[in-house]
Image (tube, rainbow, N blue to C red; front, side):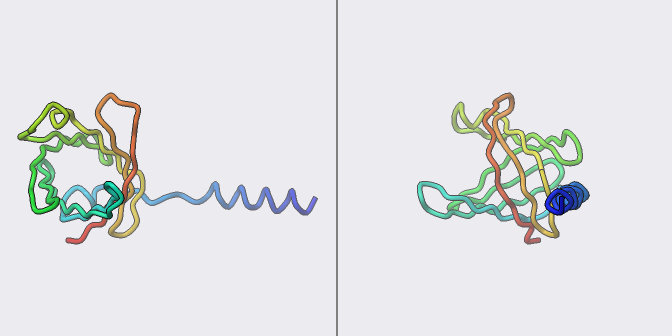
Length: 123
């Protein structure tokens, strides 16, 4: 009986916890994103305003347009794609926020395969 009461208390406590999701703080600014690429940790820096995002990766820059769907979701599309793969738009969804960090999910528009990442606002 004591175990059931503890379990109910735990479930109740967990159900009251709500992840922060203040997406408006991440519409504009300078951000960093780190990921493993071919076993190597690489960093991308990007600057975003409400309509444009400029990515800096391995000494090169690339510009994409941004269209916000709602407060926490937007579509990114390269302005000058170099191949067919770069012509495809990417759907971005901010899942959680915490101070200057947000967790997001992304994938090609219309595709079921999604990936997750974390970005940090540095300016």
